[in-house]
Length: 180
Image (cartoon, rainbow, N blue to C red; front, side, top):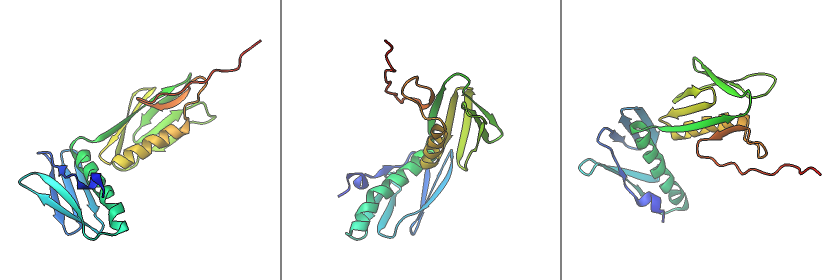
């Protein structure tokens, strides 16, 4: 039995949830999100307690595997429209920098050419300094995926620590060659 699936989702006061058959829509101060739930999952919205509860319709392996997943996806929708998600990336290395032109992120990462990345829908990018990039939005998976795409351009190397890292990421450093 999924422990995550059993927990009800608490709805913040500024968020409005509507349910029409298997389609759930969440409206909040940051935006609107929709999702169609699987048919093996039943969703109930309790207006008095301000909670969303999910239940399995049938006791199958498929229903069990989708139970906790569906609860987490709906919870991420509620958090996304109320608070949003953000990832902060830091750039280390001489000559490495980032610039933002319109909605295109330009990265100079030591290659023979600059790398241009267009920001996807639902994601915003802010370049605080030429070495700090903040990715934020209401879709948790889109924010994480775009931040991972930026990081994959120049992952941190273990000898000097040059590259793009997440805000709280710790890079294990290796000792270089020892001279005689």
